[in-house]
Image (cartoon, rainbow, N blue to C red; front, side, top):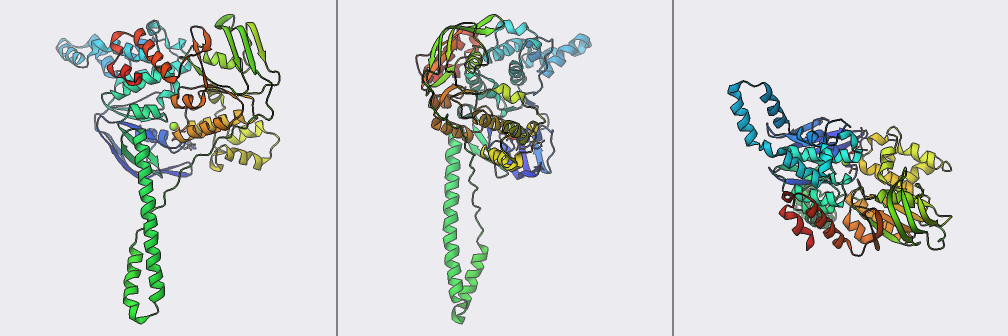
Length: 539
Ligand SMILES: Nc1ncnc2c1ncn2[C@@H]1O[C@H](COP(=O)(O)OP(=O)(O)OP(=O)(O)O)[C@@H](O)[C@H]1O
Ligand SMILES: [Mg+2]
């Protein structure tokens, strides 16, 4: 479907691809993986023609339609449903043509409309929107009424609806909740054409794709299977490579010692000569570059505070007189690890804001340890970064006490290497931005870390590094994440935001996933309860 041949691309002072070659099978679902900043989003730009290669070819069959999620999703007065329907360009064009077409052309138009199942288009659009969390009432609302995050979902829905021959998705689960992510997994699995999906989400990569394309050492390596299969195959490949390398080194040393010993002896000169030839012929086996991610540093608070950190009794909280969460009765202790669950819009972020001390309560009693220092990470911080700032500018402002070399070494410790420290925020990759902010939030050794979707944009090994750092961290944690494995490994208590309140959840993550799918199943129109959906997680 997609043929990349001898691709060379160099930019911003480094080479991204060096004669990378791969052919993606027709109809294949392929996960595109690799370290933060390795060039995944850049590869999409090359495929879409937004950047041009320095050498080689990127080819797709002639009439193939490539579709991706628009990063621009303007707040128009057009309704949600019409916005999605417009994404099917052919159907739109046929309908427009009907208005003015000559009678003899009409037959063809109707035939084509039937072929593409145009009548069912609104129903198909509805299924997709409902799967992504929109309600029936939303369908008629103008785009302008949705927040940026929801418009992003609309763009995703539009891309799925248009059903291009090659669908390109760049970290689609970042703006979804657990419910939406589960739905998308099932949807992608049965997507009728080819799809290339950038993702750092192990569950998605295990459940929805048949192949993995790995960007490493300026190559594109293709593997069959999901992420776990890929990891296994790659580990095996590295092991074999290391083994043949050490075997070859032993042979080389043996030949060399023979040559050295007998070069002087006339009687053995011929043998020494032939061995020297063999030595010269030995192809060096490249040492694989161990790819290591920088660890996260989450410094622990210096002195523990007296428990509890926070106690809520009959608290109502919200905005402008509108209560979002009511009747909160909760207690947070100094070493609690709380996992906060709930669908988008259930009030998780409102709760986080209140706990961070950035939103006053309306009524009730909130006791908060006076000296508490809170580190609060959320996605809006990333959006709020000034695109013209560089990591150096940012750290300079935050740490006036450090000199230039202190600023640079602090950034390096955060995993922002020297070469990235003067890149503007606009040009940093998503993962680089997230890494910078996460480290900054924890820099002052807070007593409570509130992490609202901290893993979005982070590559899989960075997620593991974050998990390790969280395990070492001594303070309290409130974690909001749609990353099931992280939630399971960090949280020792679960709270659920639902029905206008937050309360302890009696069950584990499997119970929660089951609850979510049951609810989605009963709320959605019958055709949405696709077979693959329920089966999968109930096991
Ligand atoms: N216009 C630019 N100027 C300078 N550097 C850039 C520019 N665009 C991208 N880069 C750098 O190129 C590298 C690759 O960026 P890209 O967005 O392709 O990474 P990615 O693999 O998608 O990473 P992530 O997983 O974090 O999204 C990054 O280090 C980024 O900082
Ligand atoms: Mg990217």
